[in-house]
Length: 261
Ligand code: COA
Image (cartoon, rainbow, N blue to C red):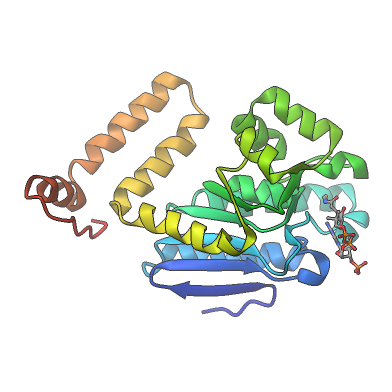
């Protein structure tokens, strides 16, 4: 198991809590953080002990306050393109993990921080959280998928208001527009994320995997193709032991014991 300098990784009872750990820089995403996230999420995808992930930030103030501005300041156009492609790849790895990932947004989620939260499957925020895409204030623009995922989550008009003003919104407003699913007091954030994840993990692992796949792939294709994909995955899951177990357990009035097979 590799060791990480900028991430705390704690796996217990099927849940891996990943904490981005640069609190003195409000957990800004520098090259090292992105490389470590890339390595870690590749390992988490392959680790059968890990059934779901919670992603959060260290310290009291921030989830992630964005890409590291000190690094961005010195980037050439060629570096900038590489940086963006690498970041997009890391976020795609998180989104495509095949197991549920919940962002526990414990403070500022700005720029790349808001983008990484959007690549997670569900977002729960603490009451002190503030979200936004302030890149335009720096003469930049989103580069980790913000121009694509934000409109899909909150609609084009609201997304463009955030993307073009660069202003932050508070947790309550983020919930109102659908950017976060839930807002809870700071001390309830991790317990709430874990409780939601445990509810998910009580269900069939293949059901979770295929549902994530259908929803992700369905965004990219016309409805007809998305429906066809759903039908195909449904057919596939009909061949699984989990389906046999889940339906038998219901009919026999007992809890199901899923194996993910
Ligand atoms: N990249 C690099 N360093 C960052 C950072 C980022 N995105 N965000 C914060 N930091 C650093 C600050 O430079 C400061 O470091 P220092 O103590 O060595 O000077 C430290 O984190 C604490 O931040 P500070 O600005 O002092 O905290 P604050 O409470 O006054 O303000 C924010 C909090 C989030 C409003 C402010 O830090 C901010 O605007 N950050 C940048 C957000 C942004 O534009 N993100 C998009 C980047 S593309």
